[in-house]
Length: 201
Image 1 (tube, helix red, strand yellow):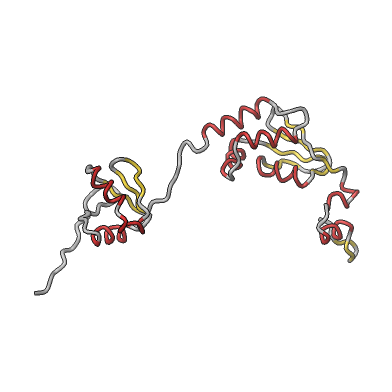
Image 2 (cartoon, helix red, strand yellow):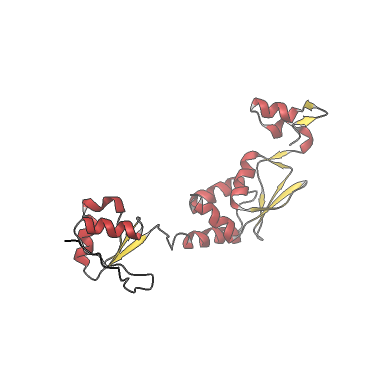
């Protein structure tokens, strides 16, 4: 960053220590720019030194392709999806990019933002350590509502399927302790035969 020069703190270093705008304190890095030209080929070009706000936004939504007298970023479905994964919405991202865009947003980029937003979250992944399956939907509803099983964090995925966040052995033990009679199966749906316990007289 050039915070040191010839063993002494440079203007950039002094600005950094003081919590001031480093780019503004360094005149030889070129003019600080707060806008970029967004192009139809899904690139963004900022001439000079991008401001921290501009760099932060474009680094979050695109990948840097080149640096020099100008910095070039490239948008793609993967980079936009990553932005949505980080909590942005299509409306918020469109508004932020419009604010820094010289000449507005090109149509291909508008389409990209909308297409990725339409697909984003259409499939959801939720944690589950084990599942409970039964054709008796009333029984599953009863188990799901049983306060004694709260520690399993049961969630009804379908009328015949419950998800438990506890491991299979812990789920089996909790169900048995609550008076239910579960049967364990493997990942292929085959019954697991447990060794019978011998009870001493």
